Length: 316
Image (cartoon, rainbow, N blue to C red):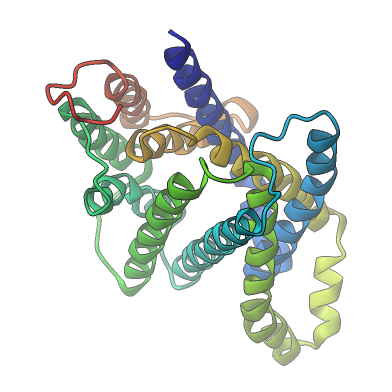
C-alpha cells in the first residue's frame, strides 16, 4: 500500500512538472524571441541553479535530504550525474531551438520533440527496462493524440525536422540518465548541477550565434538592449524559476522509482497543458481534432498506469 501511495505521489509530481512546462511555453517562446534563443537558454539555466542553492541549504537544515553526499564516492556520483544531465539538457534544448530557427513550426516541433515517448522504451530495452503491453498501447495512443494536437496541414520531413528528432533522442537519453542517477543522489543537488552545466554549455552558442549575429547587424549594444528589456526579463525569470528551478527538479524527484517510459508519458502532458493554457489564458479556440488529441493523451496516460500487465516481470 505504501509503495502504491509513493507511486501516485511521484506520478502527481510529474504531472505538476508537465503543467509548469506547459504554462511556461509562452514565456519561453517570448523570451527566446526577445533575448535570443541561446541567450535565453543560458541565463534561465543559470538562474535555475541559483534558485536551488537556498533550497539545498534549507533542506539540509531541516534534515530533509535523503541522499546527502558525505563520502568522496557520493560526491563523485553526484557530479557525474549532474554533469551528464546538464549536457543532455543543453544539447536537447539547443537542438530544439535550431530546429525552430531553420523553419519547423512550433506545432511540428512539439510533436517531434515529444517522440521521446517512443524512444525511451526502445532505448530502455538495452538497459533491461521492460514495459507491459498497456504501456506500449498508451504510447501509440499518445503519439496519435499529439499528432492531432500539434500538426496542422501537410507533414513533410525537412532538415529542421531531423534536428528535432535528434532533440527527441537526446531528451530520451536525458530521461534515462535521470532514471539511473535519481535513486543514488540528492535530486535537488543534481538538478542544481544540471542547470549550471546547461547554462555554461549554452553560453557557447550564445557567444558564437546570438552575440555574433547582433554584432553583425547592429553591434553588441543591440543585443544588450534587447536583453535588458523588462519583457525579456519577465520571461527569463519565469522560465528560470518555474520551468527550470521547479519543473526540472520535480522531474528528477518524481522519476525516482518510476518506470522511465511511464514517466515520459506523464511528461508528454506538457503539450496538453500548453494548449489548455492558451485556451484559458489567451482565449485561443480549440478545434475538434485538438480536443480529441487531448482526450487521447489523457486516456493514454491513465491506461498506461493501470495494473493490466500480462508479463509479471514488467516493471510498473
